[in-house]
Amino acid sequence: MTTLPNARLPILGFAAFSGTGKTTLLCKLLPLLKARGVRAGLIKHAHHDFEIDYPGKDSYLLRKAGASPVMLSSSRRRVVIFEHGEPCESGLNEELAHFDQACLDLILVEGFRHERFPKIELHRPVLGKPLLFPEDDCIIAVAIDGEPEWNGSPRIPVLNLNDAEQIAEFMMKDFLAHRIEKSVR
Image (cartoon, rainbow, N blue to C red; front, side, top):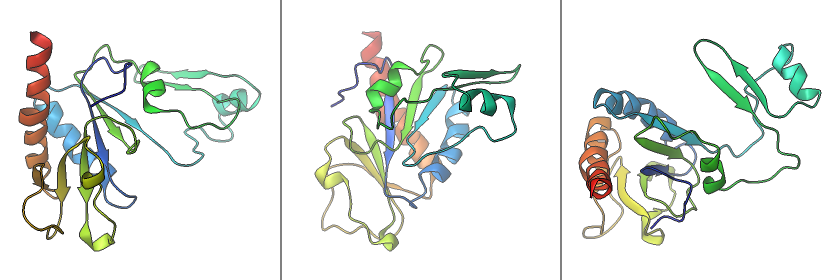
């Protein structure tokens, strides 16, 4: 299912159209996973130019002067800012090569929905967007709010998008448990 050789541990994405609530759900899921002893890291794809540093800060001035990468380090966190020479869309596998996976149990991904790796689709019928899972065999479950838009049962589990506890349980029992068993063998 996955074409990500740089993923050294389980990786699970959240795929949806903009405005569906991926970040909101992840902010609810992360404490639930942490309470279950899961150390989760996250890679978020941004579709636009973004700044995590701002004018007036020394690190911003040094980066604009040509330093790349720039590392900001304190007793509480570390951030590395790397400037691409030319604008380019890096794939998830390339980003994973730069992602420290040593102290993690799981990598969560927001975005990169067109790449091949396990994902949970988030769907809100009120937005009028099509379902992704019928065209993407990497989607392992769909979390939906409102009435489903299909006849019969889909080939994958259906979860309640507004029930983070249910989604966390699915992740633990149906996604992570299976991968932990495989890696122990």
